[in-house]
Image (cartoon, rainbow, N blue to C red; front, side, top):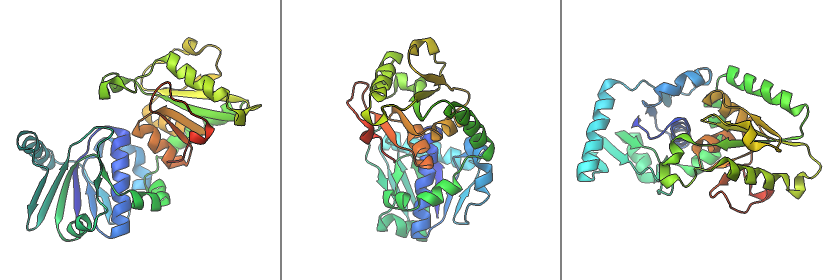
Length: 287
């Protein structure tokens, strides 16, 4: 059995990690208890009820929080990443860089331990990419936002579609991105405007009534996008998430928030790795 005692980051990171463990456990026949999803469970309470017995969300009890702090200290002071005992395995994957190599939980070695021992994992980039891709429908069904968020987003988007043919979701990630990874994905409004103008010039969309729906974690001034067909939607992260997922295409800097929205809704996504990158409509890909 695998017990997730801690994961890095916020909504998108934690959800993506949960999805990989759910997929891997289904594919390889072991159990998972996730103890670091407390703050987001309420947004998925309806689908969580249908989770199979091999995967469960449980509260992060004090014991596991204290244990994780101790493990972090061991990792920081002594560089310990793996502890192996007769009935217990502990894996620490604390790397949080965007180009960090994922820890592959789809290997026979990890699967054997997950089936025969208690395995504690702490960190974020635990991945089983083949299982994740194979079990897309299962993940989309069992980690589905509550209906009220999906319905409200759909109502908002439906009104916009009355006068537009193609809706492009633009995720403007600010907040922690000002300093994260040296601010490489912290783009200005002018830079986002250039991206949107490039999209408007796509020959494949010629003659289409295009509009952009901007979602952000900070207030966006509409006058900064004068001349563009723009709608601003920055109400609440879960509504923003569902709204992005309701668009025809999604674009934004490298972020698990947009990756998950595109994965959940099977929508083409353009990851803006640089503000001035060259791209075309074929570069929008379903994750």
